[in-house]
Each structure stands twice: as C-alpha cells, then as structure tokens.
Amino acid sequence: MSESPNAAHARRYLQALEDGVTTAALCEFFTPDIVQREHPNRFTPQGATRDLAALVAASERGRHAVADQRYAVRALVETGDTVAIEAAWSAVLKVPVGTLAAGDTMRAALAMFLTYRDGRICELRNYDCFAPF
Image (tube, rainbow, N blue to C red; front, side, top):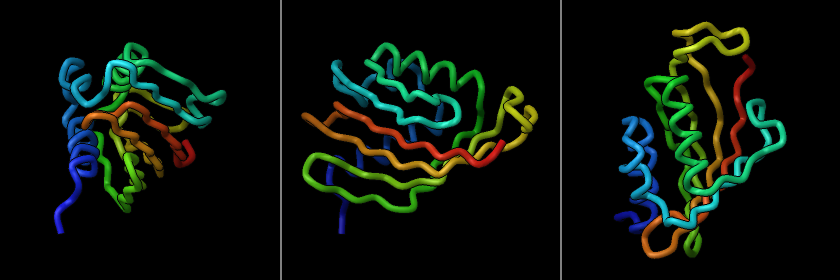
C-alpha cells in the first residue's frame, strides 16, 4: 500500500534534515506562516514557539552543533491533515554537551506532529525526550 502525499512529504522532510539541506531547500517544506511549537525539554526548558525565520535560525544553530543526524521512524500515523511520527533520533556532536564530548553520539526519542495545508507543513509540534547527558 502506498503512502499518502503528506506521509511521503513527512519522510522527505526527515531525509532532508538528515542530509543537512540548505536554508532555501528547508523552507520548501513549510508554508510561509509555519508555526513550530517545541515542547519543554532539556535544551528548551520553557518550550518555544517559532515562525519560519526562527525555525530556520534554530536549524542553522543545530547544523553547527551536530553532524550525521539520523531519524529512525518507529511509527507514522496519519489522521486528516496531520501526520504523527515517533522516531529515534541520533546525531554526532560537533561540540561538547553536558557529559558528552565532541564526537560522541547524542540520542533522543521524538514525537512530531506535522499539520499540512496545500501539501506543505503549516504547523509542527515537537516533543523531544533526550537521553541523559
């Protein structure tokens, strides 16, 4: 059974993150009025709400801190215009973080909810649960 266009787009989005795409290529996945909500985690204790510019800036900061990002999709469920993804994330650190040294692998369990409008992500909600570091 083939995936829906939104589910396939969500997988391409994760692949683009793994590939470290440029800002322009990353923006193609989102509507201009994207709203990203990062729920509280160890890096963002108060959580964050970002528009497209802030989302791109956060992605750029991440590209300077990690390499070889991987998203192993554990589950992908779709309801209406929303795709929910459970994934295991890992990345090699370019900089030390907590007890981890540059070159170590950081890991997290992720849940992402991507809401679509006209074939692009208009809302992104992230629940990032980082392994102890």
